[in-house]
Image (cartoon, rainbow, N blue to C red; front, side):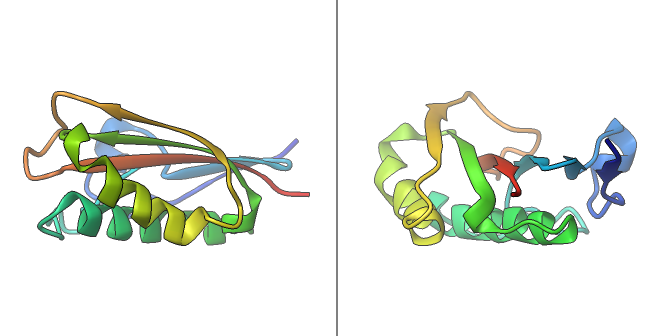
Length: 127
């Protein structure tokens, strides 16, 4: 199988040594996405707003390797404040409500930048 990775689009990929998205055959893995732009700026004031931005980054990564939201089979959501799970979940449901991948939401103590409130990963299978 061929392995297709992404060019480093953000501030961390090149330094840390990872790809935002990798596709090998029908399998696709999207690394953790937050609301950070390519210049390292965190966008969104609430976990729900940040989740919407992070999910847009997931969708963009999927598109770069020929996949889409409908191909997603698993997501993992991380937040620094699990009491905000409803708004995070609503943002997830707006994107994946019809797809219904398996998922988990976990509270973590923090991210690289303390302004980050959420992160989401996705795995997909393209038929």
